[in-house]
Image 1 (cartoon, helix red, strand yellow):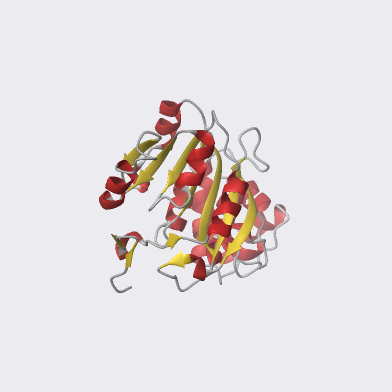
Image 2: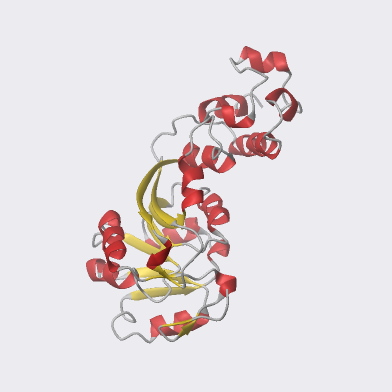
Length: 265
């Protein structure tokens, strides 16, 4: 990306900045989030406030997490926003969301237009805090949303699909064309809602680390059959005993079966 000035802010490529400016899309996102006074609303990457301003009007105060010091200064100096925002200037990848939720007094309602360059990594991180988070509404690269909602036997189905669907109910909200941003990204985006299963997981595992290990093994060698990719832990006969054809590949196995195998470790 070449140097790009938007609303007096020099866009920083290393932070993956693309600023939403389409008012119809903004209104649709605010409607989808439906924030209410008394809820703990936290925005990741408020940028220039395109979503921040209409949201804070509905809830009177909220927390924002922003790494760009120039944007933090602009938010802090905004006459309308400065008394309504709790600004956390920090890399979101370093935040302990259990501690943040405890500090703010209840599970968090997270939202944000996430930078493409950290979106998948951040989703994996947030899935480690199911009891600290009430729900999440994120603008993501459309390809990432397709992976989140993918079903077995599809090309998009992968480790992200399994882990996200293990922890959350996932609902696509709306597609967002690239022309809705300044500067315009090369890909289209999509807003998605993730709701952690806090009362009962559909397919609980005794040790989540085992599920992580299995999915890494399987999808790192996704073109190999399960009898090969999971041979460290299971013989073909053991897989067959669980009702799993050992000649299947990683993308053929459902969340339920990955959880079943994880509980055997």
